[in-house]
Amino acid sequence: MAVKVHAIGRLKRGPETELVERYTKRLKRLKTTIRELPEGASKEQEGDALLASLPPQAFILALDERGEDMASVPFARLLGDQLDQGRELAFVIGGADGLSDAVRKRANILLRFGSMTWPHQIVRGLLFEQIYRAETILLGHPYHRV
Image (cartoon, rainbow, N blue to C red; front, side):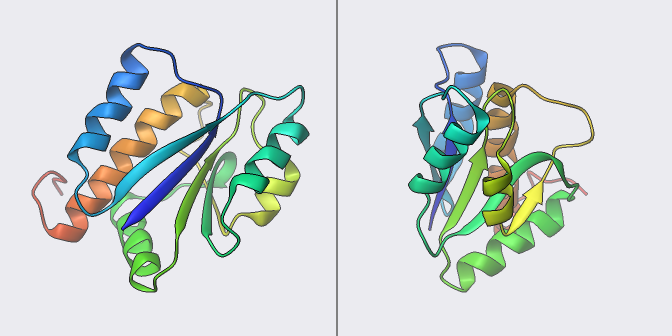
């Protein structure tokens, strides 16, 4: 099952890219790819590019500082439920200035990784780890220790 991450900006070679690649290689069921979009002159331009890149029927999970906190097990169940229904999953990561209002409105769910602000490059690594963790939870693998 495919999961797509739509993100503003390109990761350069370095630890963030290595982290994303590490978890991408580990994924078996939730094959996850990333679509990098160019940084725009404004948050609204980036939002327009993100919206244009999203499949029309996809279930959108947007990473936003105003989103809800979600523990790993409910996150895994959410992904599993959506995929079991045959829905495409698309995650959205904005640029340095975050997401436009239009992207937030289009999202089915707004998520955040805690109340701290994270650089968008690091959020990619965190997201790919959580997708991998979700897969291991769904498969009953011991990676996620409770």
